[in-house]
Image (cartoon, rainbow, N blue to C red; front, side, top):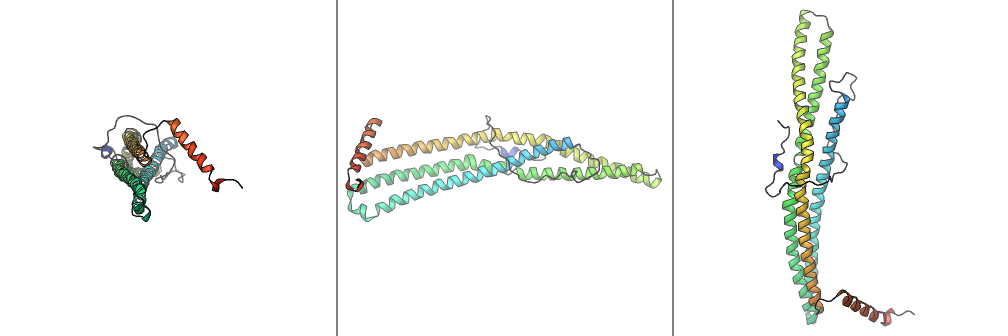
Length: 283
């Protein structure tokens, strides 16, 4: 029986197909305490076994921190895009309401074209952010919610290990004592406690050794569709933004689409005219 539940990672909005390379970095989400580092007694578990267990714990620490970081950065990204969209709309609205536009019909028409494009782009921004929220941010939050259960399971395993060590020490102590009636009773009680402690530790240790690698590997199939959705959302948004700004540019300049060579010629001609202005001439 698993010590933490992975079933909550299944989302109606996220398919789980392919694999991706690891995106995880070195951080820490909790401290695992090895009770034998400060104990001079013989350990009930070998140091090699403990090192292997700690390696798995460390990998989950890293995974937890990177998941939190990715969640935080994506939230900031969507919020920033929304701020940019609103700020640009405010610029066009302020220009349309300015005296300059009120007295210049041609400029007002151009700013109006810009404002309509920005309004459409603002709607695209909202649509993209909603998609990212639903298919990336919320799944990340759900994935991150598993880690407290992992932390609790590791702590309980640690406590079971300490109890196992304690019971082993007590059993060894009574084994060395004189075999009197009282000592035999205590010896039997110590053996029963040791058996129960050993069974508890073995159960928790085995379950964690099985579940931790499975949980860590689940990130691959879980995150793949999330990242694909993020890329698709950004591609759709940027394609629409390019289309809207291109159309607005040609509308504002009264131009049809021109070749790159023609565009460069126009730029060069304008630069030449600017250089001939008196304010740009060298003394």
